[in-house]
Image 1 (tube, rainbow, N blue to C red):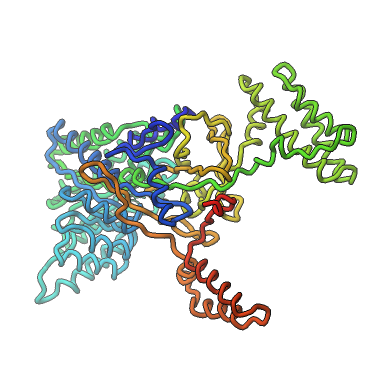
Image 2 (spheres, protein in one colour):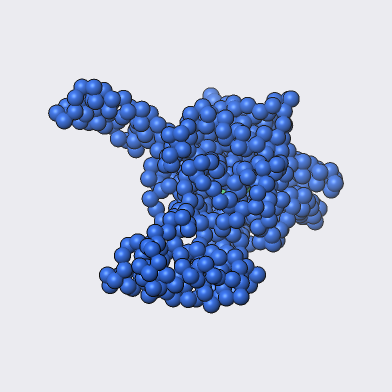
Length: 624
Ligand SMILES: Cc1ncc(COP(=O)(O)O)c(C=O)c1O
């Protein structure tokens, strides 16, 4: 990894390294460290989720800009429209920022459940589109009718013929005698022959969970005609999967969907006017060249979509459709940065100063020999000494098991072998052998970080999706420690290890003396709502950072992570009963006097008002 932690690959110029810190490349370039410290000074400890609405605006402008340019270039007559799929991030500070920064764009929302539909109905400006996808029952369809009747531009995408029957039923109920005839627009999700891509590939292809086959499409078309709802058929929809790394599958899907659109138009679906290409526009998460995740630019993406639609419309003699996208990841990922403090380095005990060697002559001979190997290892003998050290370790551990050496000897063995391995790796760093790689893996320093992978990076846990990570400061100093990251859950899956070929190098720090923060980037899509409360670690404290016209920044929204009682309340514990149990166990104790009871109760209620994350586990906290 380059010294910039791959910022030039994944950063999209959103952040810059200036001096020793990584700064926001906007306004007066505040450093993430400065922002973090200001928030922590207000008493918020633990991980922080920083939201940057200007980065949401940037992505929306980029998306609309690319399609506007492509339409101009090709002389395309259909319009471009976009909705944000709420499943990607439903958190209020995100959605409210999204609506605010997209003002004037007629940017809408996509809903995949009743709760999301309620958000869409309440937050989408009138006139901007709402699309409704996923499986729906009668109530959900009725909600869409309510939205349409209250003036929303809403399209319900049918995923199966059963849903269409329900739409017809609800239509009859809502538009009976005496009521004004208004119904949502209808979209049809097609079951593509071409399959999806990437780890989310199941969204497309014949075995996909969603969409109508050709036979079902024709049947739906006839049903709409019979029910005189054909004028509501307005959209063809598909989605081939999220994080589409290559453009080729999209091109195939576009041809398939474009031809279905044209065929239905030619059959007489006059009101059919739009193709919704779903989401899938990928984000570059890679910190390493050449292992990048996306093989196309946004310009290429937009050009391909517009060109394909134009070609098909021309060939089949139908009007060019309006193009809808439902890009979520592309719009949301970059706006959020998770900042988490390092609490501890685990192999700091493998330090020369921790050795407890006895006076010469009193150490077991093999321990003494290890010490001599450590003192005299050089480049010329490194491989041989390394092998000797590993061999001695095996023997010494067996001697311990048999009771011949004591715990201090065993500790000296562990420290010395670790020091020898590190030295050997440094001396042999020009060699590229499997053995060396294995050893490098073994000595990755464990950085204990105050966050939960399950809560804040669930896609890493579930899918192995890596997110760019870098320290927020000391970037003018060469990092030397290949690191792996441990979270604070009691779960061995709560670790991010790095491949020896693509290591994460961090700084050697003394956590008792200094703060060290890691930033996890591109966490704004999917991670928050998929986050799990494993060990009851909750959504972290979040802050919205906005810039004024002079480029000054300020915190405009701050929501603290839930306190302990609220977490239990969410799990449906009766917190009144818990409160009573805790209180009475102190108040009714015969073992403590009144003054101590008051003190214990004071502490208890203070702790109950705080969240689950650790304050710090080092003595630094008491120095603060
Ligand atoms: C129907 C639909 N539209 C849009 C999206 C958003 O995809 P992305 O976040 O990759 O843009 C999804 C995600 O799975 C989806 O299922």
